[in-house]
Image (cartoon, rainbow, N blue to C red; front, top):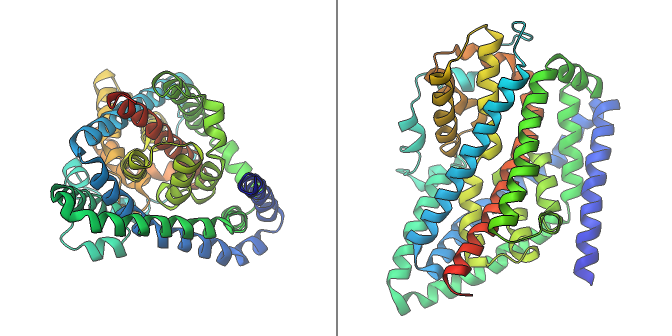
Length: 408
């Protein structure tokens, strides 16, 4: 009962934090910026625990599952399918709404993070990011994918030792419990952190009126992205959850309120991971050995919202420049956006950076990113929420498939 009331009031506190943060950022933007240190502390606390959480969770999961090939292949196939569906929805929506008709609606400088990636290829993103020559540097740069690969290898190696590795299993099990205890402590400060993050971001944008002006100026583009995310997140993914995981979507989402609200506030799947795992494993009762593997991997490579957004953004840029993309170019956008989103791990501002690949693939100018830069911070929150929601549903689906195979 105590846990119920704790979670209930925590969700209410997060919602209140979002509302108050929006109000302070809108009407007292300077105060919102001054209070940014609270959000920075909260994000730093989450990021502090993310890397040990990923290493311990995946290593422990592989040691207990043993059959890495089966679980890994099923997880990757699921993520590929749902990411492909998301991109397809984005392409359909942007071609129906045509947000870029009428020429460029906004101009802006190409950010350095985008210009520095000119000439980047899919090989750079999909292959070279998987293995790091220095795991300590990867941890320092918050490059998660090579750490996941290393954790999988160590977990498989320990599992191959049989009973000799039991002491390692026991140690990692205790570490996992200790890490989740720290996560619970951090969660207490979630409403304050979210309040600060929202207030700061709206304050930097110039207040609520400035945000509304931007949204109106790019209204059809914002509508295209949000409509695509809505269709994928609230229609397609719940249907997948109902059909393949045999779970009630409304009941399932209630267990994930803290994670989804945090994802919206932080715009980071990785930073949200501790709360995602707590909600999926402890609240939604997904098998821990599955959740520990599927969720960290999903937070790194399963980017449904990002992939959909990239497809919409690239076609919007083409329409704004008056460039007609034929069926062949649409197919290129489909495959490139799908693969680029999967390989986005470990890259700062991943959505903008991997968009370079898609723009280059269809011959569009990279300067087109300036069209959407002003509103990207807001849309980033919507697509991150769908990214996390997709991870959560993936965990339930894979858990159902695994339990069916095990005859339970």
